[in-house]
Image 1 (cartoon, rainbow, N blue to C red):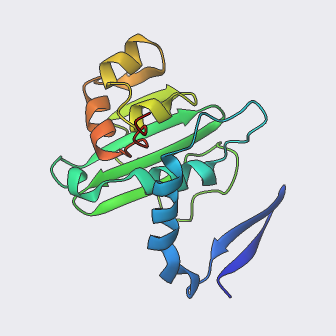
Image 2 (spheres, rainbow, N blue to C red):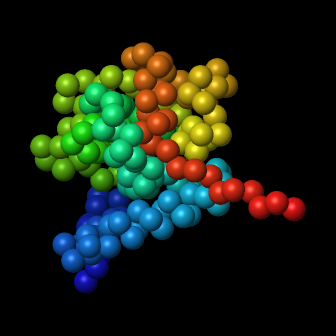
Length: 171
């Protein structure tokens, strides 16, 4: 099969099988395509560590990350908290302890050396990732709240995690 069920304390999760992992680039490409027309989540939409993990993996630009020193981010979106480590070796991402959802696999700790930047955001993080808001504007509009670290690293985050919004067709 392509996916298998993972029993959880509060329901089920699904993961790609080894065979299904061959579709990973296709799934991420579909995510990039869908982002172009996606709006902010509705009030009834549920944001999970799994959905945010896929969103960040979809937006990750390895070419941009390789131009920066390795950087660790602690990202808090509602109740979800993820650790992300980027650099020339790729993207490492895992839920932080205490974050609801699928726990981090044993031995996976993107924040092993501490976070260079920790921030909190709501659904408006989409505007930062799409480039509709600059890092400076995201902070000044309180779309993003810096918890710790240098605010200038939010520019690096926005460059490393970027998806273009859909072009608006001419009338």
